[in-house]
Amino acid sequence: MATSKKGSQTKQNIINSAKILFYEHGYNKTGIQDIADHANVKLGTITYYYKKKDDMITDIYNVFFLALYDYVSVTSAHLNLFTKYCYALVLYYEAILNNEHNKTLYYEVLIKNVNPRGRTSITNTLNRSCLDFLNKNYIEADLSVIARSEYGARKELFVNFYEKEIKFTGRAMIYFLIRNLFRLMNLDGEMIENTIQQGFEFSNKNKPENIKFLV
Image 1: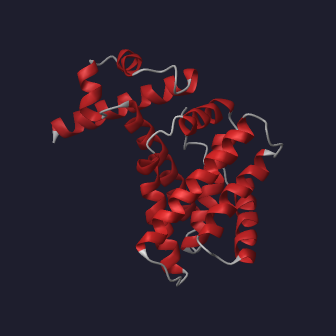
Image 2: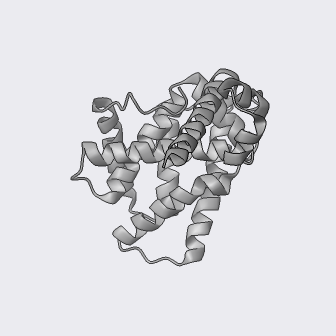
Image 3: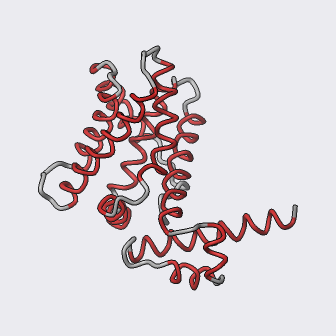
């Protein structure tokens, strides 16, 4: 038990250091050795828990999104699964777009195509659950197509937004990113529009201050 607890603390120390350095220097200028030095551990300790920097990114993204989903679930337990998913996405993208450091990391990760499959595993699970909840017919191949199509569209939109080739507001970008996902899932258009709007209203009233993307 003690070893397990110590191992968990070491891993958390590593990921905390990674988040600080990613925040301060971005993805491209942060190396594994930098993270080891900041965490005051040997390089081999880093690679024991994370084979490469990409794996840390996957962990950071997934843990952050799940924490937001849990926050929505606890704050508004009466909401259905689709609505919770939508609200969590609003909070997720707001945290990224409303902070320049977070936004830069997200941009760099998209440009580098950092392990998109690892970061879509949770999304695929939620997409499946959402389709099941709404009694939508689909086959396994549909989930893969949705994930790949959504990733490609999100990358194109976000990169162009970050590089100011398109003149969306941050709120408009969030709206289009979420709407695109649910349209790929062939959900009702009016339901999508209403729920995203409700998601923005939820965000205005509920701020998960203790849940951080990076720092």
